[in-house]
Length: 286
Image (cartoon, rainbow, N blue to C red; front, side):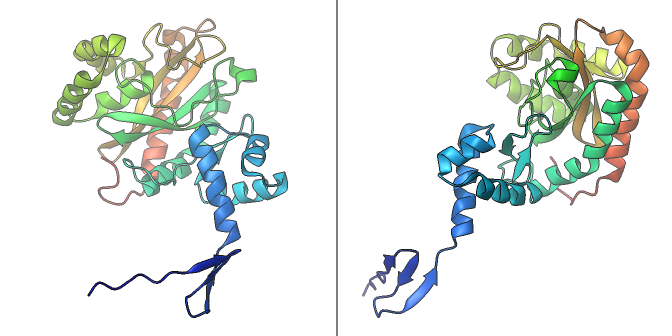
């Protein structure tokens, strides 16, 4: 005979069994944290004021909960404007939280040092599988660099961006061929055309030792500020590419050759330092 499920009565924040026994009390802090995560996840980039308005919680409460979530890397807070985004330890379907967290931990101080040494913006990206990368940290500041700063969580083109093509070029040939065949099938427009001509771009990357952003490639429709340019190299843990790092600047101020001549060595050393300090569980990064 099929047993009937017990029916519990909810009174306020208390669950009461059919026999009248108090079973448990719901955790208000967890509920509030979940509300905040839901708002950030749905909005993408969120201010403290917006979170307070959407959740109905006082700003000091939101700030305290967000600080805890940032500390656990479930949220990321922008150095630039203080807004919140979903962080690297938030559950993902591709790259695991531990791996993303390891690269951020290894790279945060390094990219700040590189940015200070060059005066340029620096983006740090991690592989998310299938030959693509996602930006997980940046030093871009609009007031300083004149380029769009809100890039965390963005997945640049694997064929037209500096970050994407630098990573793809570092993947072993067999895997790269598999990735490209799948990416070609799903790409459209200029990305599709760039995918078909990537072998030529690959030869250029190998010859120069870095990947450059394709001319007139505009990463996202909400970009503001001047047109950016970038050069990038892969980050490797041992022989395995795990991400990429780029120098980014206002295109009208410098050309690729001058930045590469002056700063490529620094960029390579930073990528090597990040890769050397990574301790990744086996199988964590595709």
